[in-house]
Image 1 (cartoon, rainbow, N blue to C red):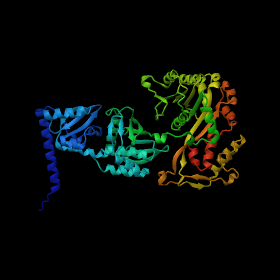
Image 2: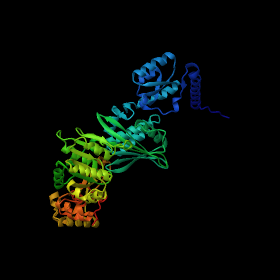
Image 3: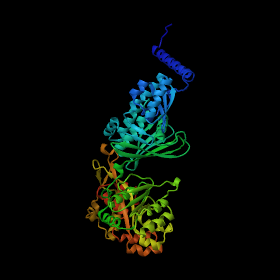
Image 4: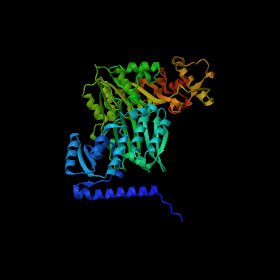
Length: 568
């Protein structure tokens, strides 16, 4: 009979026994000798914000390990919590602005915390609500990430490091989203794993799946830094925190919602670099652009933007405000939330819990002697009436309204009990918009439209011509409709293999001219308004979409996904 000895296994078992003996000794000595509470840090989540309170060299030298922080209260593990040591450490942390609470911990337990300093290059100098990403390692990640596939590889590489997984995956996901200009990060628990998706140019893309264990720690980490309740998993919560990258503040809005397999997390990234768009770059056709410029420079009036959530209304409003800003006028905004800060403009954010609604904000703004007011959204009849009255009393008012098209603005305002006779004088301009993805200039491919596409384009083309709209004025060759060429997406590394890169607007607008004013008191339908608006000569969204298709800016399918091209 041959007996084999597994020396490695025996060594592991002896190490475990020694560690357990050390933990048992800490349990005995902590209260009996030192009068403090024992703690075993090996199985506890360690908060990166806590270990930032002391650098690694000092922590090892003093044999201490901060592991949890709540506001200024700091929990610290100490190897030998004698009276002299505690007195010195109390002064040390108090001088840094913390309120320390000490626990006795074993050396192996402290080493578990010290290992976490390897993550410190990812995020430094943070506090609750703010994470400052300034480490060279993150900058290198951002520089190296070009595609979603790169982000996936980087996260998978971090998953192999079980000790440091949580913060690295979260910070790599955020850094990667910033690198590729993604607007949202989604962590979605499903039956077998947690799916991670990025929203890029308005479309969600799968990145990878992570385990429930990793998601649990990421969830706690996000809740901690965004000021949410960590233990509450049965209600929806909203929070926020900021990242400072090379001196630029990037706001992140957090939404956490309970689900069948765990809490779903959405991080919305409000990057000034991607949100701030000049009016000239929105994709507004020249004739319509001239109308916009004329109306936004008037001293008073009501300008309303319509469109579904995520159609770029706020970006357009910001562009208007930037264009008209002057030190000679006062501009006030009431927003929910403030997307990004505009220099020289007074911005306020609604808070329904405290009673500061759009209506209250608008009323308060009017007492501040403004020239221009932007109301994030008109949701009720009181806000609608106040906005209309403000436009009549010498203010230029911008706002948004939920309707399907520009022609729906007037019926909607009348539904909100706005007096039609007053509306005639107050309303200046109704605008509707959608966002479409732009074809990647590096890989888009020319194609001949199929029978359905060609028929639809010709029909829209012919209808526009009936009302004197000439597509040649928009850079489209209309000599031979049978030789129409359009473009389709292909996909390359420069566009994350999507075939698209960036987005632009598709617009329509109705000028409140004499023809429109004449029918408003009669509570007109959308169809009646459209018929008169067609004579104004501005492209509607269908026609604007077709122009952008024929110019090769976007694809037929992309326009068809946001505009009803077959509407009569």
